[in-house]
Length: 291
Length: 344
Image 1: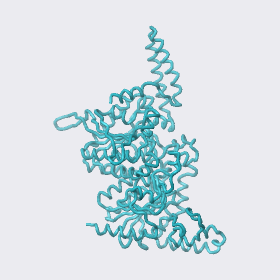
Image 2: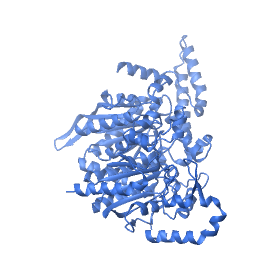
Image 3: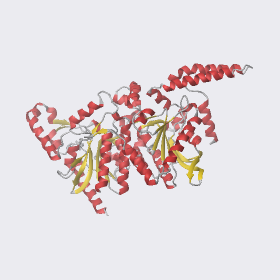
Image 4: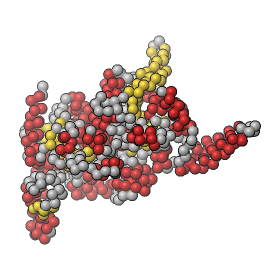
């Protein structure tokens, strides 16, 4: 996998866009306009991009790729990725509608990532931190051995360098193609966070749409502070599973960020445009509590 | 407790329930019953009955040595399979159930209590002594009938169940008692109240807390090890599994309907997901397989309990040599090492 620095990555993306686009965009209206998932309004794509991928009409937060989020929230150019070459292994030779090994390759091509999370050191408001950022577009952000190992490594890195930790979650849960080993990643990541906590290093968990299943039931819910983007689906069981179990329609807003805040599970629901400032304030708090 | 014990006997021994693949046995059991009836009328059929019983055992052994994964799933879910309370009463002395999470409610789907493990061996320069080891027992609790199962929510715990378990684990830690957990659940309950009260948070906190427990902790998968709901009390220093139990990230039915878009493909899902005891042992998710009586644990609670007890003695003796710090480090190593990946 070629190693791209963040800066290069964005430049590359920009170049690509410029290279492919002008004419094409006019031909394919789908590229120019996006229908908002929530309010169904047709919005000029550029308008959404310029608005941090938030619908200017209803405030719906579209998904961000890991690198988009890094660029938006962390200090420019500060992110240094670690464990860049780690890849998933199809140890069960698992085949559903496609072999797992193929799914991995396809996701790698599609996202340019090695798996569903990137980890590294960065700064925010000039405060050095360790961070992990998940990417939903890589197999639904599912947690398999690589995600588990990378989260464990960033915890150990933070312990080693005495850095506070932040993880942005965006994940459908455990990666079923890795069977029971995906479940074990819940135990593994929680063990690593137990050590971090023991030593007294702060951990901020930011949950974005969606964060469900084994991800929520392990590292995502274990923040010293839990923060959520607005209207994100956050829960243990998926809404469909619950509906099938209780044979009832779920009330509106169920398992959304505001619902979780109301029930005491998250500290703050913060919109994307204010996230960086909020996090700077929070990390500054920890800097000043350090002995 | 006496009432519970009689109920248990009644449940386990009367009225056999046969699984699809056990059909060849039904005929033989019927014959025995007929012989018993006639032998009441002055004829001695004891010899014939013994012969038939022997044939049953041979046939059972044969059938159970060739179970497919989905058949193992059926045995693991058998309605007569010994439950946590059955095992707690048979393995330990003076099991006393404790209730409530001190927060919201008492969850009948997840039980726990204190007990004694008798005749633990202790070697010292003065020789061997025996003592009763106080232990804390926790486990999912299924019912033995539809009515009981509704009361127990089919062994699917709510957050208050996981919080009760955590309370009891902390209790064990304070009084330096080893913890034994029994895992037998389809999964943590997916419902409105469960989500409102933080099912994910409850399980997550249990995982982190179990990682830091300073006492010996043995988890035994005694039936159905269903996903996060199972792991939520299952992070032992040692994880043991009964021969015909299963442990999976999602039920074969769930896996089939999500990944294969056809719930009827559950047998195939069970096959490829590697959820049986030997498969789990191979990748070190479990440390030991505990033998079940011929025909499965429900055929003899006593023998099942005896086998589990033997395994507990062995692992507890090893873990008891570790200091609190070493126990935590031992657990960290165990879970730290889980996973398969490639790195250049």
